Image 1 (spheres, one colour):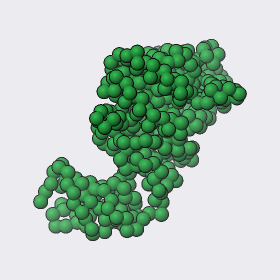
Image 2 (cartoon, rainbow, N blue to C red; image 1 turned 90 degrees about the vertical axis):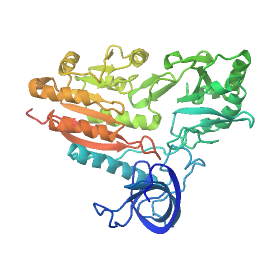
Image 3 (cartoon, rainbow, N blue to C red; image 1 turned 45 degrees about the vertical axis):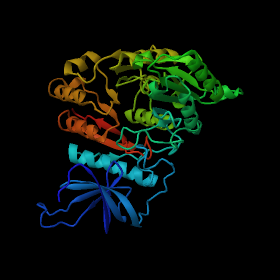
Image 4 (tube, rainbow, N blue to C red; image 1 turned 135 degrees about the horizontal axis):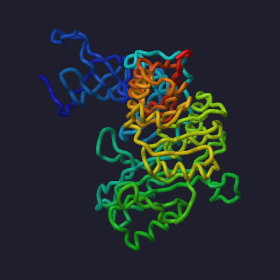
Length: 476
């Protein structure tokens, strides 16, 4: 019988060997082909909780003509790289789906994903594979957006956490191992706080941003502790009693509370009214103030390593003019300004461009770092010409990649190649769009892919952060 999308629950006791793993951390197995299989390759089974090389039994949860989805039932032969998940919410929470896989195997898998995408999509192999970069595997996430849902007023329960896997439901979690411990410890306390508010059913989200200590060398414990901001999205005005509860919570747990009554532009500090939220890049003597709603990397330690490697690979000289595309609040621009003669940071969002200018002033770099707002998804060769000549570019686009920029570079290669940068360092958070852009840069814009490798910015997740270096061959 052929089944469609309706959930099923079929116990399969015939053992099967798992051959591979997809980016959702599902084991991939294949049934032996039968007469009905046109290509005689056998039906694919995606098994949640199973790892490559394991022999398992499973329960089918969704059955289609060409593949089935399942969850592991019994592990008859475990993989040598299987690990014990640390988080109590593993398997329910939609994050950290790779906790059952040893961290070294996670890194190897992500490196393989990058190399496979480059080979199959771009038809290119890097001249050098960069050594994978890794850092802390727990308590590394300094930014998070938590959902809050009123599960049952009668039961007195509010759930605050991440969503369940591919679900609109919020996971019932009292701790999170990838959040800093002091933030994880706040989860049950935030439940109680939200439950006590008059707008309990109109407080759908809490955003967390953790900054570095205001003064790590201070004898004052408050100044030596990380600064933690909580942004409560309040869809209705707070009552006086609500405000008192939030102030008391802030005082007791030493957090900085912000409110967001409407869109992201309405985020403002509530209590205390002032504070200092920042991260630092000590190698470049940079202190980067930011607001809780600003885009920043979630993993501060890995961001330091990422910036350091990118600038080292760019090989910036004191006489260079550099472009930093998708510059955000200046994460790469300001360190680059310590090395180059001049850096132009270009960003699509006006709010981030404004923050970048403020940060340049904060670090005394207004004479070396300038910023402009421009839509980097609508770029032509004329646009690039208007930016002026720069031999070194750094690009750090969002998941969509930088296809229009790469196309414009290809046009310049055919008509005005003297405007092309000699070296590009491309930081990517999506290996597929990176590979698509590599295809354009290498096969149309005249670049070679000198090196590429991954950065394990988000351990235990399927997120693949990577870096690629492009060079113009000598003589072009």
